[in-house]
Amino acid sequence: MNVATTDTTLERAFTPTGAGGWAWARVLFALAALAAHLDRVVSIRDALVAPTMVLASGPTVLAREVLMSGAAAWATWALGLVGIAGMLAGSRFARAGLLLWFVSHAGVLLGCGLNVRAPERLILFLVVALLASPFAERGLDQKARSPFARWLLLIVYASLYGSTGWMKLLEEPGWRSGEVLAYDLVDRWHAGGALAAWLSGHPLLCALLGWGTVAFEATFPFLVLFPPANPWVLLAGVAMHGTIGALMDVGALGTMALAMYPVLLDPERGRLLSARLLARFPWLARMYR
Amino acid sequence: MAYLGVCYRSSLAYLGVADMPAGVAGASDLLWLGRWRMFTELRATHTDLDAEALVGDRWEARSLAALYPSAWDEGPGYLRDDFYTRPERLGRLADDLCGRTPGATRVRFTLVTWARTRGQVDQPRTDATRTELADTACGAPREAGERPRGGGGGSGGRRGGRRGEAPAGPAPEGGAP
Image: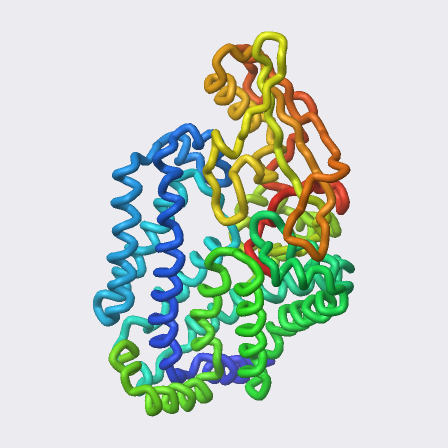
């Protein structure tokens, strides 16, 4: 590949594209953050029970050195609400709001000596992508912006889904038989409930769901880049996260991941879908724009 | 992209099906940020941690769930596999439990595992396997890094060694499939 060809490829890859997806992502991300943040209220008690610091694990050395008082924990948590309000307000409040919420979220997490899991790590990547994006701007549905941050998100999502899908497909036969899923559906902590338990007793349904999960995750990195398949693979992602949400309690991963789907949608399709939605539900425009 | 690629390879190493990429073995913690391993492995058993304190000449059961209610989505903190497989962490729990149990001279922890039963909400402990993780004297000075008896001794958050050796924990390192 000569220099001219490389230049042309890069120019094509980084040509400004429709940026309306970021406006939807801002609102959805703020709502997902709000849901997760409200859910964390019950965990604030951890800060009040200092002896549980003995359970601190992961990169939480700070929690063992600096015990957050109850008042400090509540104040930190409340700052997160202010940040979320800023994100929802958009414009000049959005970036500061995002940072404020993230600092609050991380502060409560580390201050309480809690585990840092995949959802929190994904949030970090999403915050970086949002900060690199034009998500705070008004009127994004009328604008074209550099796709740099969208590429960043695509790489993160390809890694998130692709790596876990390939591991399941290549290294864990229990996923192909549905066994892994069946046992996860009766986990004492993140699953349970009558529907999940019932499903776990039906091997054929578990195998179908298992194959569906693996097929989506393993092919996502390729299909999401292929415009005709792009909306369908994202629809499959909505179905997967929705099913998980109905059957398991796995924290904020699903809602956070879904919040950025408008950006992953092919920009031209996204523009058309956005125009259709705003025409049908004009009240959405107040928050969106 | 290269970073996430190396993270994927390191996930395979943690899964026990590949070697850690050359040159990053000493810095595997840096790869943790992009290591997505979610519900990947078959987990056919439940896990619980039982605690007992020796008061006088009787072993008394102590409810860790009541004493340490701290939980985060995936269950109580003491049931994280990277907690109970680490001797230094279990040692701190032992010290704390001694302090909360008047008259205790020793405390011990037992890992209890039992098969998950598909098709039902209730998951009673039937045919449980019990493995003593630690039996610690209260008030005894402990060398830094001393390993309570049978304590597994993982490192860097690794769930275990090669495939099949991973301890059965309450949740994977990720959050959702």
